[in-house]
Image (tube, rainbow, N blue to C red; front, top):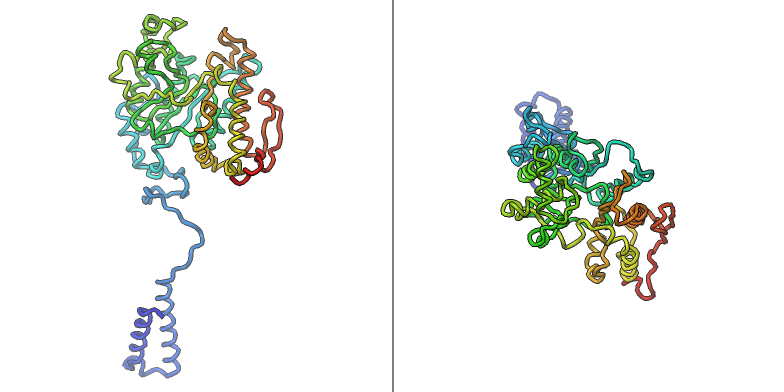
Length: 451
């Protein structure tokens, strides 16, 4: 018996032995009253030390103890609470328009997160992928189908890696068309998602071809933007192709707001739009057309204002942050075979698993990928020069080459997803082909099944 409980009961019984109050009552009544009191005391004390068991698991978010912000799930964030405390959303001067700059965005975003503490955990790695297409049906007969599959590819990737997706098919500014259309969308996404650290623009004609690969965000911790590029081509060659602005990662911060504003003002909303085209054409001798474009504009900023921008922009060239499709579609078959060879030797790489834990198997694979060398899957294949919706394309290749290349790349990526569901495209050039995946796929070689 608990010593404290024993002492408590003994004290109660000692009081019962006092006859000053009970002397006028019968012994029978005394007995039952004493028994009842003792029972109540024992029950109360026992309940104190043995609370009613709760068989439902409870989860407490490390940064959310506020009554105004109860956490709905221990594995996520509170989507049902938006406190009445004023934030930038209540400021009538705040505008989503690309023509109205945002000031003190870091402070505004920090204040919003303070009132929504369940979003703070994991905020440093939270990404919103943004992409889009035109508001009208495609002229190219297969264009809408290709755009649907290109979007599905992005959704598949984000489902595995936990990033949100925003697909826009409207011009948010009437003058900002073509490659300039992304800037109003990116700015609006930054304001719509203060919980996200990164906004990731991916052109509609770019697709993920390594569905396992995860962005090395730690590498970019001291930078505010990531784009595929080569410093030597910017500063030594002054080439229009020294980077590609069709895929970029930008931090959701005031620096990026300033960059988006400056960058956009070299586009059609500027009174000097025509002049900017002339400046770019004179600086980049390999630029093929006279109009100012987003890619030349960013290279211009890096070249002319290196001290302001270079240290903040990471020019990624260690992997295919985006790769030119003409150089990549020929390697898919060999890459697939190299990965299968790897899996035949290592049982845990070919083990069936739930799609939700795919990142763990990607981590397993990393230690073996060094052996594959150049046969590592390209992360993003970008069909630059192919316009799936309009049907236009670079004159260096015909349209059928573009569309067949897209189908092959899409099926190559889709096989990485379908395998989790037990199926594969047996022919990368024929999307209708399907085959069921055997249990132990690929079949291990003799003596290697348990390696």
